[in-house]
Image 1: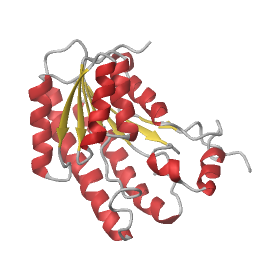
Image 2 (image 1 turned 30 degrees about the vertical axis):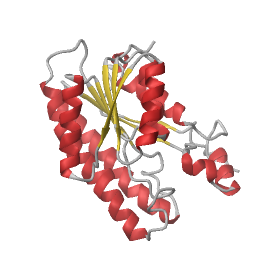
Image 3 (image 1 turned 180 degrees about the vertical axis):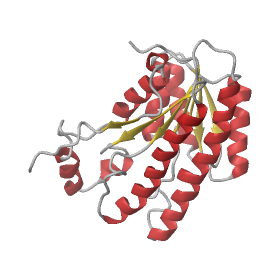
Length: 258
């Protein structure tokens, strides 16, 4: 049984996996949820509306995690609005597949991913982690969660693999080192999704649909809700003895011959 949380922060919660996680927090009784977004105000408002429909209270904060001032503004507003934080989910990342950067060249995409997904996330998490360590209120120890990628350690061909592989591998490695640093006051874990049907997956051609199904033992795409279910468990006090872990959410990697 998942024990509910009080106050939560989800970065990049205006769509996809971030939205699903924020809504799932509300579904399991989180009282106050900070919904972070960068430019997608409309999407963030939709997330907030669904949280409120479930009885939670939502706070919207816009910030560029790639900018030091944006990171500090996010931290300041998070503690101002929530006072104390039970769970912080680092989900925000640059959309280089369907966003404005979709037509950029490989180096431009990689540079922006590095600035936001790695440098920005690391810098933000170090500040947040130090703040979480200082918290003395609350019934349970706080937790932090990162979003990785199940193929980062194994590699994947093509531009996508060469971009997201090193980026997500860095995030996953950092999460494990941060867990060592913040213990025992704060738990830190990482969820590594596989083929998840977010905006890109919904418009992918049949070749990618076949691949997503064939590489999962359960023979289907994952959904943002699949990732959210594991995220909520890992952040919940029910998982109080779990830290420093990277958990795949991919339907089981299919090693059987085709």
